[in-house]
Structures are given as structure tokens and as C-alpha cells.
Amino acid sequence: MIEAQQLTKRYGETTAVDRLDFTVRPGTVTGFLGPNGAGKSTTMRMIVGLDAPTHGTVTVNGRRYAEHTAPLQEVGALLEAKSIHPGRSAFDHLMAQAYTHGIPRRRVEEVIGMTGLDSVAKKRAGAFSLGMGQRLGIAAALLGDPATVMLDEPVNGLDPEGVLWIRNLLTGLASEGRTVFVSSHLMSEMALVADHLIVVGRGRLLADTTVEELISQAGGDTVQVATADPARLREVLAGPGIEITGRVGSEELQVTGMEARAIGLKAAEAGIALFQLTAKALSLEEAFMELTRDAVEYHGTTETSGSAA
Ligand SMILES: Nc1ncnc2c1ncn2[C@@H]1O[C@H](COP(=O)(O)OP(=O)(O)OP(=O)(O)O)[C@@H](O)[C@H]1O
Image (cartoon, rainbow, N blue to C red; front, side, top):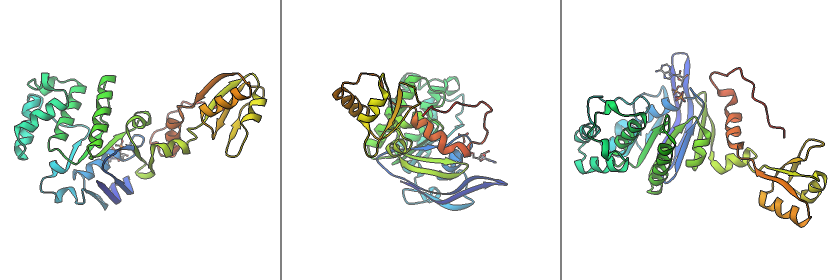
């Protein structure tokens, strides 16, 4: 469990983290989302005591990081720019950490197996690919068998197989009852792995919600339908809580408040042929963009075209 109360970090004029209140609970994967410069890394550094808050507190399993007698057994973290001695092997790197924290060699072998590093464990870490380096960082985070696991942008630079591996690892750790806190600036990635989302922008809390809630708030239940007779389809689908939009003269309609399956069945009952019946999959990414629009540090100059709804 991670609990932040009024957590604030200022660097001179910049307020990197601004009065954040949130709780990360065990047994689920919590995504920590925000555009570049939103304050995610700074928050994570404060969680593991690498930065001191200017104001407010953050605790792991009920205590500040520095107050834990065996912090590695409480929280394992993969932070960006992890420094690993390039001449040392993965095995030696993990053994050195294990030794200084009273962790047995057996656990080092276990985490090497868990992260798929068996075949390269004796090679110099300096020769590791980005993906292998990430795996080694995760192995180090898991070394103390911690109840809380925190990873900063773990999928950055990974190939599809590596991304899938991280996804399975995270859901597996959560199903063992651990607290899993993972940052990303990619909504699409988080939507696949996280149950709960904490969204920040310019250091402020923008949302603390479940993925389902965010989807429904974003109109994720919008279904795109196309038919030769949109006017009749409108009549057939009309009802309380159902909103139907579409351009005049277009065969396409956007329906919210009714699932694709129900729309298909109603159209079939009325003998209306549908050419298209698509649940709008992009809405989650759009919701994130909308939520963080004012919080993006550097806007590009390219205009993106809005949806035709
Ligand atoms: N040591 C520091 N000194 C001065 N400013 C800093 C320092 N660390 C972070 N900042 C600033 O604080 C803000 C938040 O940065 P942070 O790295 O925490 O964001 P982030 O959400 O992790 O971004 P990214 O997704 O790009 O990693 C930024 O404006 C950044 O420039």
C-alpha cells in the first residue's frame, strides 16, 4: 500500500508535484499516467526516499521509506536511469545487492529465472540490450520479495514480446496480493494492464478512477453504425438514455447508451441491414488526451482532426 498526502515537490520555480493525495492498494495493478513532465518520476523518487518532499508525506506499507528497517523487502522499484556497473555480470550485480541486504543466493537464482535472464546471467551487464537491462532492473526490484512493486516506464523501448512479458508479470504480481504501481505516458498500454488509474498533469491529480469508469466517462460505449436507412434505425433505437448523432445525408450514426450487440439485435428485428457495427476503441486514448490537454508541457504545432460525432 502506498499513501500520499498533500505530497508536494518544488524545484525552485517549478512545482513538479503539487499537493497529491492518493492511495495505491494491494491486489491490483495501478497505472500512474500523465504526459511528459507531469511529475510521475518525481513522485516515485519520493516514494523510495530518493527525493524529499517539500511538503506533505508519502508512506509505503504505513511508514515512510526511511523508517523501514528492511526497505528492499517492503518496496522494490525500477526507476529510470538505473545505474548498473557495466563490467559486472547480472548475477554479480544481483548478488552484491542481495549480500548487502541479507538476501540468500537462492532468491537471486529465483529472480533470474522469473525474469528470463538464465542464459545471460553471467554476461557483462554493459553488453545488455535495453530489454535485458529492463529485465535486470525488474529482477533487482523483486529481489527482496517486496509486498509493493513500483516500476517507472517499464515498457519503454521494449519489443512486443517484452511488453507482453511485463504485462503478464504485473498481473501475476497483483494476483499474489502485492501492490503494483506502474507509470507510463501511454494510455493504450495502461488500459491493457491496469485496473485502477491515477492520472496527473503538471503535478496535480487529474483522475483517480477505474479503467471502466474512465471509459464510460469518455463515451467509450459509443458504437459506430452504418445502414442504408439511418432515419429508420434512429426510430428503432430511440429510447431513454440513448443518444444518436450523425451527419445529415450520411449513412453513419454514432450511438451511445446501447451496446453493439443490442443494436445489432434491434436492427435485425426491424429488418434493417447494417454495413458496420463498431464499438469505438480509440475513446480511452482520447479521454486521456482530453483530460491532460491543458497539462501537456510542450504542445506540438500539428493540428489533429476531431471526430465527426
Ligand atoms: N532535479 C530536478 N531539478 C529541476 N527540475 C526538475 C527536476 N526533476 C524534475 N524536474 C521538473 O519537474 C517536472 C516533473 O518532472 P518528472 O520527471 O517528475 O515528470 P514525469 O511525469 O516523470 O515525466 P516523463 O514522462 O517525461 O518522465 C518537470 O517539469 C521537470 O522538468
